[in-house]
Image 1 (cartoon, rainbow, N blue to C red):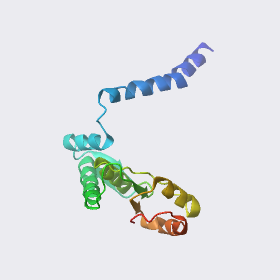
Image 2: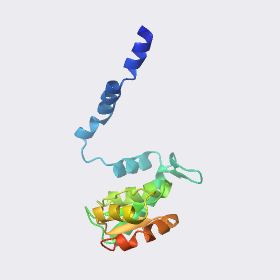
Image 3: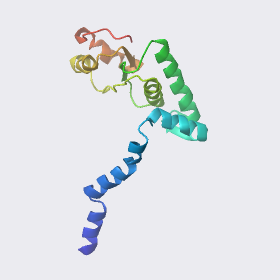
Image 4: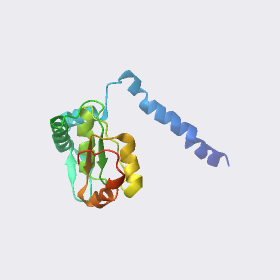
Length: 157
Protein backbone atom coordinates (compact mmCIF):
# COMPACT_ATOMS: atom_id res chain seq x y z
CA UNK A 1 0.00 0.00 0.00
CA UNK A 2 2.80 2.39 0.84
CA UNK A 3 4.44 1.79 -2.56
CA UNK A 4 1.20 2.42 -4.41
CA UNK A 5 0.55 5.68 -2.61
CA UNK A 6 4.15 6.72 -3.25
CA UNK A 7 3.68 6.15 -6.97
CA UNK A 8 0.47 8.13 -6.97
CA UNK A 9 2.18 10.93 -5.12
CA UNK A 10 5.10 10.89 -7.55
CA UNK A 11 2.73 11.36 -10.51
CA UNK A 12 0.18 13.57 -8.82
CA UNK A 13 -1.38 16.54 -10.61
CA UNK A 14 0.17 18.89 -8.06
CA UNK A 15 3.65 17.60 -8.83
CA UNK A 16 2.96 17.80 -12.57
CA UNK A 17 1.92 21.46 -12.21
CA UNK A 18 4.95 22.19 -10.05
CA UNK A 19 7.20 20.69 -12.75
CA UNK A 20 5.43 22.73 -15.46
CA UNK A 21 5.94 25.90 -13.43
CA UNK A 22 9.63 25.10 -12.98
CA UNK A 23 10.03 24.61 -16.72
CA UNK A 24 8.27 27.87 -17.56
CA UNK A 25 9.93 29.99 -14.85
CA UNK A 26 12.72 31.17 -17.20
CA UNK A 27 10.07 32.84 -19.37
CA UNK A 28 9.67 35.67 -16.84
CA UNK A 29 13.38 36.44 -17.00
CA UNK A 30 13.36 36.44 -20.81
CA UNK A 31 9.99 37.92 -21.89
CA UNK A 32 11.10 38.80 -25.43
CA UNK A 33 11.90 35.18 -26.29
CA UNK A 34 9.31 33.84 -28.69
CA UNK A 35 8.95 30.51 -30.43
CA UNK A 36 10.15 31.94 -33.78
CA UNK A 37 13.32 33.19 -32.07
CA UNK A 38 13.88 29.77 -30.49
CA UNK A 39 13.64 28.10 -33.92
CA UNK A 40 16.00 30.72 -35.38
CA UNK A 41 18.51 29.98 -32.63
CA UNK A 42 18.20 26.22 -33.15
CA UNK A 43 18.70 26.70 -36.91
CA UNK A 44 21.91 28.60 -36.17
CA UNK A 45 23.17 25.93 -33.77
CA UNK A 46 21.89 22.70 -35.33
CA UNK A 47 20.89 23.49 -38.90
CA UNK A 48 20.90 19.87 -40.09
CA UNK A 49 19.14 18.36 -37.05
CA UNK A 50 15.55 17.19 -37.65
CA UNK A 51 12.97 19.69 -36.43
CA UNK A 52 9.69 18.41 -37.88
CA UNK A 53 8.73 14.97 -39.11
CA UNK A 54 5.64 13.90 -41.01
CA UNK A 55 4.67 10.84 -43.00
CA UNK A 56 6.05 12.35 -46.18
CA UNK A 57 8.58 14.95 -45.10
CA UNK A 58 11.34 15.79 -42.65
CA UNK A 59 12.38 19.39 -42.14
CA UNK A 60 15.66 20.22 -40.48
CA UNK A 61 15.89 23.33 -38.31
CA UNK A 62 17.64 25.09 -41.17
CA UNK A 63 14.92 24.13 -43.67
CA UNK A 64 12.17 25.08 -41.22
CA UNK A 65 13.81 28.45 -40.68
CA UNK A 66 14.16 28.94 -44.43
CA UNK A 67 10.55 28.06 -45.10
CA UNK A 68 9.26 30.23 -42.26
CA UNK A 69 11.34 33.10 -43.68
CA UNK A 70 9.45 32.68 -46.97
CA UNK A 71 6.17 33.15 -45.09
CA UNK A 72 7.60 36.13 -43.24
CA UNK A 73 8.56 37.76 -46.56
CA UNK A 74 5.11 36.96 -47.97
CA UNK A 75 3.47 38.56 -44.93
CA UNK A 76 5.59 41.69 -45.25
CA UNK A 77 4.84 41.88 -49.00
CA UNK A 78 1.13 41.69 -48.16
CA UNK A 79 1.45 44.54 -45.69
CA UNK A 80 0.90 42.38 -42.59
CA UNK A 81 1.90 44.50 -39.63
CA UNK A 82 2.14 43.86 -35.90
CA UNK A 83 -1.24 42.71 -34.62
CA UNK A 84 -2.74 41.96 -38.06
CA UNK A 85 -4.63 38.68 -38.16
CA UNK A 86 -3.86 35.93 -40.69
CA UNK A 87 -6.03 32.83 -40.16
CA UNK A 88 -4.60 29.41 -40.85
CA UNK A 89 -6.87 26.55 -41.94
CA UNK A 90 -4.56 23.63 -42.58
CA UNK A 91 -4.13 20.09 -41.25
CA UNK A 92 -1.01 19.17 -39.31
CA UNK A 93 2.03 19.18 -41.57
CA UNK A 94 5.41 20.92 -41.65
CA UNK A 95 3.96 23.73 -43.78
CA UNK A 96 1.49 24.47 -40.98
CA UNK A 97 4.30 25.16 -38.54
CA UNK A 98 6.40 27.08 -41.07
CA UNK A 99 3.55 29.45 -41.95
CA UNK A 100 2.64 30.02 -38.31
CA UNK A 101 6.27 30.74 -37.37
CA UNK A 102 6.90 33.04 -40.33
CA UNK A 103 3.81 35.18 -39.88
CA UNK A 104 4.30 35.36 -36.12
CA UNK A 105 7.91 36.42 -36.55
CA UNK A 106 6.83 39.68 -38.26
CA UNK A 107 4.20 40.42 -35.62
CA UNK A 108 1.17 38.83 -37.26
CA UNK A 109 -1.38 37.03 -35.12
CA UNK A 110 -2.22 33.55 -36.41
CA UNK A 111 -5.49 32.01 -35.21
CA UNK A 112 -5.35 28.29 -35.88
CA UNK A 113 -8.76 27.24 -37.17
CA UNK A 114 -10.26 23.82 -36.47
CA UNK A 115 -10.06 21.78 -39.67
CA UNK A 116 -13.24 19.88 -38.74
CA UNK A 117 -15.39 22.99 -39.12
CA UNK A 118 -17.35 24.00 -42.22
CA UNK A 119 -20.27 26.27 -43.05
CA UNK A 120 -21.63 28.56 -40.35
CA UNK A 121 -19.39 27.30 -37.51
CA UNK A 122 -16.28 27.98 -39.61
CA UNK A 123 -17.64 31.37 -40.70
CA UNK A 124 -18.32 32.22 -37.05
CA UNK A 125 -14.71 31.47 -36.07
CA UNK A 126 -13.38 33.52 -38.97
CA UNK A 127 -15.75 36.42 -38.24
CA UNK A 128 -14.72 36.56 -34.58
CA UNK A 129 -11.05 37.18 -35.39
CA UNK A 130 -11.67 39.35 -38.50
CA UNK A 131 -8.56 38.31 -40.43
CA UNK A 132 -6.78 40.40 -43.01
CA UNK A 133 -5.79 37.17 -44.79
CA UNK A 134 -6.71 33.49 -44.71
CA UNK A 135 -4.27 30.73 -45.61
CA UNK A 136 -6.08 27.51 -46.44
CA UNK A 137 -4.97 24.06 -47.52
CA UNK A 138 -6.38 23.06 -50.91
CA UNK A 139 -8.12 20.01 -49.47
CA UNK A 140 -10.17 22.26 -47.15
CA UNK A 141 -11.44 24.60 -49.84
CA UNK A 142 -14.90 22.97 -49.81
CA UNK A 143 -15.20 23.72 -46.08
CA UNK A 144 -14.44 27.37 -46.73
CA UNK A 145 -16.76 27.52 -49.74
CA UNK A 146 -19.59 26.30 -47.51
CA UNK A 147 -18.82 29.18 -45.13
CA UNK A 148 -18.50 32.08 -47.58
CA UNK A 149 -22.14 33.20 -47.49
CA UNK A 150 -21.87 33.67 -43.72
CA UNK A 151 -18.56 35.56 -43.69
CA UNK A 152 -18.89 39.15 -42.47
CA UNK A 153 -15.82 40.44 -44.25
CA UNK A 154 -13.74 39.35 -47.16
CA UNK A 155 -10.28 38.25 -46.06
CA UNK A 156 -7.75 37.75 -48.83
CA UNK A 157 -7.34 34.04 -49.50
